Amino acid sequence: MSLDDGLVSSRPRLVAAFLETPVPIYLETFRATVAPADCDHLGHMNVQHYFRAVSDGMFAVMVRLGLTPEEIRRRGLSFAVVRAETEFHHELFPGDVIALESTILKVGGRSATFHHRLRNLSTDDLVMSTEFKCVLLQLGKKQAAVIPRDIRDAAAEHFATEI
Image 1: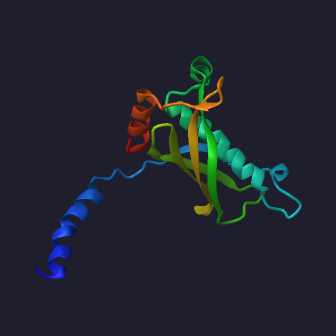
Image 2: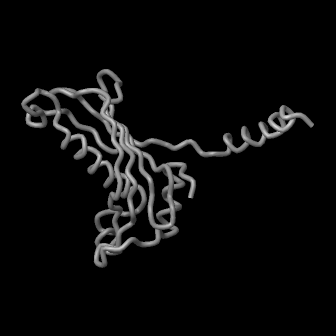
Image 3: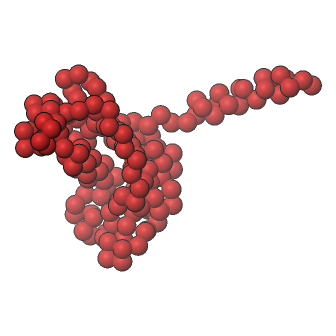
């Protein structure tokens, strides 16, 4: 058996595994028009407003997961960011209309990884992308909680997330 034989025989398994991996579904979770007050003295949207869009988008994601404001209060559970990795691709200016699309890349035992991409709707440019690792926080105890089955099922249903 040659080295090539081993590589060739493993390719169908790699392709099959790739084809079985769900492709994440992105949903629009925030839309706004950049206001002059959102901009700094350099004339472009200040970084805080990029993260405001993502923060608002996270609440829209949580609603899709069944964590409405009422459920957050009742259950005492909410996702909280523990790590963020962000890239800024293009500037935004007053009058630009933006939309945030969000998905869930992974759901673990007590954490989930979310990905958000912010677009300028006029140009379709990707202006910012960020990946958030979040824990499901027990609000009263300030401790990570195990992610319940109903939240996992909602992630799989709405975002094609592997759980």
